Amino acid sequence: MQSDVQRHVVVIGGGIAGLSAAASLADRGIRVTLLESGDRLGGRVSAWPTGDGRTMSRGFHAFFRQYYNLRSLLRRADPGLVSLMPVEDYPLQRSDGTRDSFAGLPRTPPFSVLGFMRRSSGFTVRTLARVNIPAAVELLRVSFPETFSRYDGESAAAFLQRLRFPAGARDLALEVFARSFFAHPEHFAAGELIAMFHTYFLGSAEGLLFDVPVDDYDSTLWGPLGSHLHAQGVTTRTGASATSIHLTDGAAIVTTGDERIAADAVVLAADPRAARALVQGLDAAGGAQWREQVCRTQNAPPFTVVRLWLDTLVDESRPAFVGTSGYGPVDNVTVLERFEQGAATWSAGHRGSVIELHAYACDATVGLDPCAAARLVARMERELHRIYPETASAATLHREILVRDDCPVITPEEWAARPGVVTPWSRLVLAGDAVRCDYPVALMERAATTGILAADRLLAGWGLAGHDVWTVPMSGLLARPRARRDHAPREENVTTSAGLRRCQPTRSQSG
Ligand SMILES: Cc1cc2nc3c(=O)[nH]c(=O)nc-3n(C[C@H](O)[C@H](O)[C@H](O)COP(=O)(O)OP(=O)(O)OC[C@H]3O[C@@H](n4cnc5c(N)ncnc54)[C@H](O)[C@@H]3O)c2cc1C
Image (cartoon, rainbow, N blue to C red; front, top):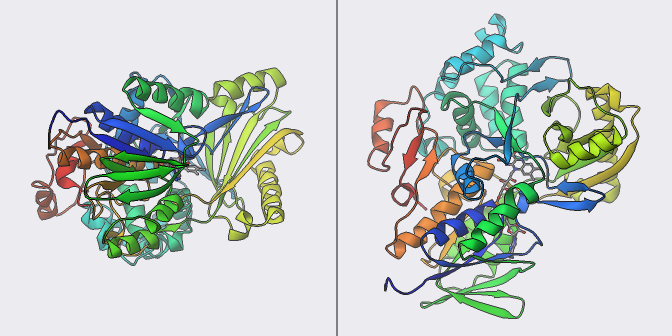
């Protein structure tokens, strides 16, 4: 490879994974053309104006403090991360009136989890006596990526049953995770749930606390990041859908509209369904088994987001965000004026609240039948009246409804058979939250991390330096010494005072 030849990469998809890949490639002087089929950046974390100073988004997102790689992406345009503000707590509320909170817990594991158990009404001496201790110890013995494979075939529901955690604690502390992945616990991989338990409870000091953008995603996050990428030389084209990929010995050719863009390589960072369609039509020799692996990936059932502009303020004691259990289809409630500037301005002007309701893993009919969707929305609003009774008499001045099914589900099938960043062709790499990754990361952080890993794979092929990738420690507090040692040659781990690990991804990513 000639070092004076400027390489060109087409990145398909302007969500977090595509943005992360584009920024990482541009760092090393690669010419990047980013194609986004929608009319704005951010993908599933995008937001748009709806008139009258109001905005709608793809739904409330929690920016957890363990999202090291996503945060470093955002820092490119916002070095002090002033566009994020902390949400003081992540309360979890059950319909029987009990509540749990993650604020004010000790920061060091396992004292953090012990503190949570001591405080939680879900854990009593009697219910704790029923816990399956060997299964609970498994949570402390994790060692990634092996742990992902160890639970092949076991669902999150089966693991929760085996664990015999007290029902309340199981619903609140664990099932909430499975549903936040848009999946029924029966269809969600136990390994993934255990990874999240490690990340949030046992493997890091940050716990379940998170930050949120101070205004809508477009104006706070993706607008500034798009400008930063432009300054880095990235060509960003919104409203440009990639319709095919052709790989030859000498080039990667992406078609969009009537145009054929020739490049050295492609990062496919589209959402899972769009990525499957592009792989099905991929014009390249070989790779039959890999194509099958990609086509076997699945989307989660539909989710529903309802945003309401009410003529009444909710009680000032209501938190910015609450996870719920036992309120029919409602999984969480957000009071947007607590942190989004646009919502706060609307709220002050109308003496009303801007409320968002989420329902995950909805019945498939909700995505197909408008009447089923309308029934679900009516039910969600009735449940809101139970959760925050002061809303029952409020009039709804505006309502936005979004039903989509574009999230992946990580099923209990063989973890190693999921498509990773590396493909059979050196000119094509994958990125996104559906893509297998060795590290205990998920959702937005997996998208950001695989974006870096995809870029680094291409950079390594061209003899260029990669990037540091950060993760919580790869093994649990009681991991066998052998498991800990086995990681040593795979990564250059640097344990910081916060207990983080820095990994050299080009060595540890197994494709
Ligand atoms: C309601 C909801 C709440 C969520 N809450 C959280 C949360 O609290 N915390 C968290 O970490 N995660 C959360 N997530 C998940 C998070 O949104 C995703 O994990 C993340 O945004 C995935 O990013 P991505 O880049 O992999 O994919 P996407 O964001 O889907 O980006 C893919 C992009 O590719 C584009 N595209 C598709 N086809 C083409 C084509 N042919 N040509 C060009 N472009 C194309 C799409 O338009 C899209 O912009 C939530 C998701 C939803 C829906």
